[in-house]
Length: 151
Ligand SMILES: [Ca+2]
Image 1 (tube, rainbow, N blue to C red):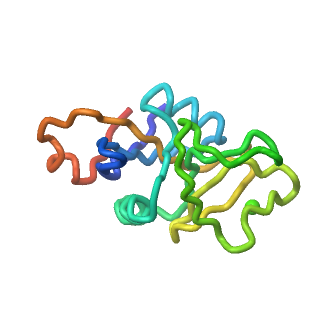
Image 2 (spheres, rainbow, N blue to C red; image 1 turned 180 degrees about the vertical axis):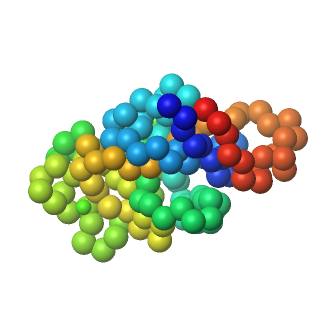
């Protein structure tokens, strides 16, 4: 299987560099997390509005899907948390969300508009992984351009 994976930007988050990768292959949230943990660090944690805006702005032209991110809850009574354990409380929900429609919406996608919705984890969506890069050594400019990386 060939995944089209786009490096969609380099971000500075909490004093560390982070690469976000868009994986266009649609997967369930759980499979997406497994993929991200195998190939990167985890599903994406998005800490603040400017990072979200930069991520969305950097998507490949023509891309038009909702995307899984790392936010989820273990059950309807659990707090929303990021897969990597981030303490971030950034939650730009759509109005009237999260609504746990149908009683099984425990995972979160971001829309292209930057608003988030709780959604059925079994649904298959493209997703965003991240890789933490603690030491950059001056490579940042080279990676700020979009790249398509064959798997
Ligand atoms: Ca919902």
